[in-house]
Length: 238
Image: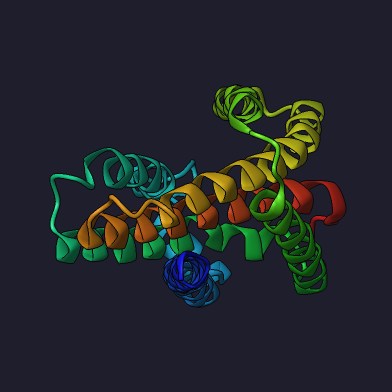
């Protein structure tokens, strides 16, 4: 009898975990779809120059910098304040974040040709998928590894901000190479963390619902950053 109970409990736990990750990936793919559509619509020279370049051509409008950095602030807000926000508010912020990311990524379509973008997207999908499976299935505790990768992420972010003014191709290449290792490593770490959340039976349904959205957001951010890092390495600028 006890063995049957344990089997039923294990099956129930697997079903909950499966449903949790379905929601996580649904949010991730929804964000990718929204960002992709917005980037495709806005990724034209006419849109970019009309909205982001000053009329006299002397530089970029403040709107460009708002669009570029707003997703960072919005992403932090969602992750830090999700417990105090309702699910509806989180959804609105999540979709707003996805749209803003699409706008900020639209310039990528102007800098690289579509063949390189498509190839890099498939390479990113393969690398991301492999590390996600590794993170989900490994028995090794990745906590310390994740902390190290997160420190690397902060370093890359600071270097990227500094390079806006330095404009060094070498710095861009080095951060891109490091970024590939950091973002693939963080993918494995977050997958293991999300698995722990999914299997936590003491957590309320609303908390799990919110954390599935947060998980989708985190994986989306990692995917996009891995894609951009690989694009800097593999892509040839137009």
